Amino acid sequence: MKNLLNCPICKSGEIKERFYTGIKDPYNCISGEFYFNKCTKCDNLFLGNPFNQKDIAFVYPKNYSKFENKLFNKIRKLLAIRLIDKVLSQVQNRKDFRILEIGAGSGLFSKYFFRKGYKVTATDIDEMEMQALSKIGIDIKIGNFEDLVFEEKYDLIIMSHVIEHFYHPQQIVNKIKGFINDNGQIFIKTPNSTFLFLRWFKNHTYVFDAPRHLNIFSEKSIKILFADPSFVTTVKNEFTVNELYNFFKLKFPRLNYKYYLLFTALLFPFAVIPYLFKRSSRLVVTVKNNEHSS
Ligand SMILES: [Zn+2]
Image (cartoon, rainbow, N blue to C red):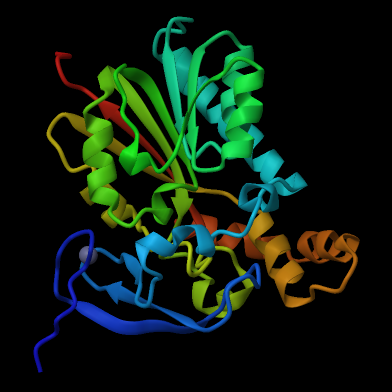
């Protein structure tokens, strides 16, 4: 029997259907079970039974980005900011740098860089969040990224936990290529499909986050998205402790959070192992546009 499925990223037909089944919405907003297919060529996982794109508003619970606003995520974002700060100091630390944050949510990145004096544009479908950013003076664009029009070019584009949500990520990347400056950089954080404990954690991790995550990228598949002679893509595993914390939180939802902290501290080596194997739960990707540089 001919396999009719193709990998949405590398287009290979070498697919293991229903590689992960019985996946539930970790936020308990959407009922039912979901499954992910796996591309054996690029290790990409893709949601086998997604919602229709026109029902996207239904798939996102109100204040979805607020769910992310917990202590650990704040720490994670602050660590990411340090990473980006490093990027900014490596290139020229010019204040006329234009920064674009796609899927900004509550805008922690945007606010941080805006306060540092950079020109920041934030985009999101969440109107309330965007209006709040607009009030403090950040340039905003509200709507589906697919529909937004960009007239300026940007030196740094940030997409933190965003690219896995798009229906057509390659189209998104192609669109971004149109407004990244020469020598500009793209900074991406996204879950990792080759996370060592993925099968074991299954419904006790936010890596799947069905039905909102449509593609879970691997080092290989994310590089395919940016395969272009003028781009240089670097992929790193992120060391994360909060994956363990989330595991306990989702496994034992009724306990006080202090127990999650205690369990996490006790089982700390389990946070280190995936990182040592370069199979941690998250990827940090930097893409440099080297066009016109010699
Ligand atoms: Zn593939």
